[in-house]
Length: 79
Image 1 (cartoon, rainbow, N blue to C red):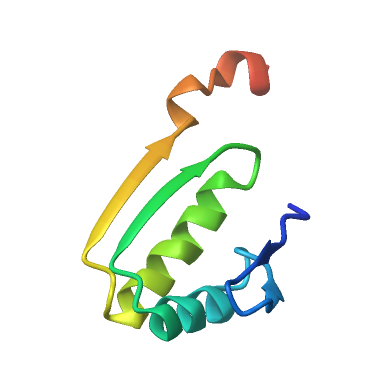
Image 2: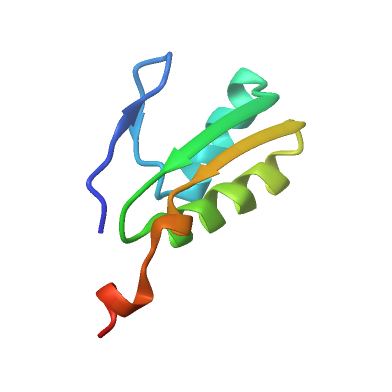
């Protein structure tokens, strides 16, 4: 599990792994564009949570998503 924490402009600390916190900040600050670049073992789950938050917020119009999943080599990770 990731231990990533982010501080919003208001000083409120939360985690991008918490979709409710992400959605709240999208709405609160009227975020209309998201640049998402994730890596790590929980990238897929975090990306899904972000996408869910984006849809529920209703204010995000543009998503730029860079993924490292293309670098995954199953034969190395799962012999």
